Amino acid sequence: MINILDYNRIVIVGNNGSGKSFLAKKLADLTSLPLIHLDAEFWRPNWGMPSQEEWLKKNKEFISKEKWIIDGMCSHGGTIELRFVAADLVIFLDINRLSCLIGIFKRNGKKRTDTVAHQDEKFDIRFIQFCKGVWDFPKTRKRTIINLHNKHFNKPFFVINSKRKMNKLLDQWNKSIPYCLANEKHN
Image (cartoon, rainbow, N blue to C red; front, side):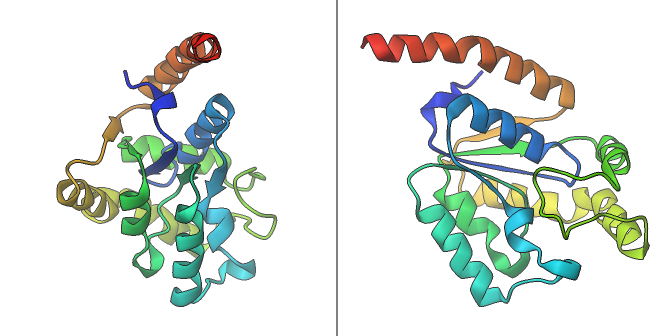
């Protein structure tokens, strides 16, 4: 197990529905690191997108800070590598795509804390296309993540391959972090 307190800049990547936002919120609570949800930053009303220049500028602002947790892929405009390089730790949620789809169907139509009000997910053609992207993840965005890992092989890269493992790690971190923080106060 890694000591999550050793890292000040954590990026969480993975398929849609893999639990990136859930894990990011839990880690932000545990570590007190500022949290940035890329989906909330990226999407405009009616699923509009910022220009490539604007998105690049925003990403440079995010990563220029000393401490953060960033969750989400939002690889539009080729910015994923910027976050990958700037991170102290990359957490890859390599969760089974069927599990991801089930999670997406469960959350569909519900308000989420990691998105803004105008980002309602509805069961429409866009949702079907979104689900196709989730299913195609191993052939598309997963390859991007693996290629970045291979290119930046010295970057700490932690893979979580099931939601059960994620919950077990969160439980372990919950138990160990108060102990670590108490020791830091005494040193």
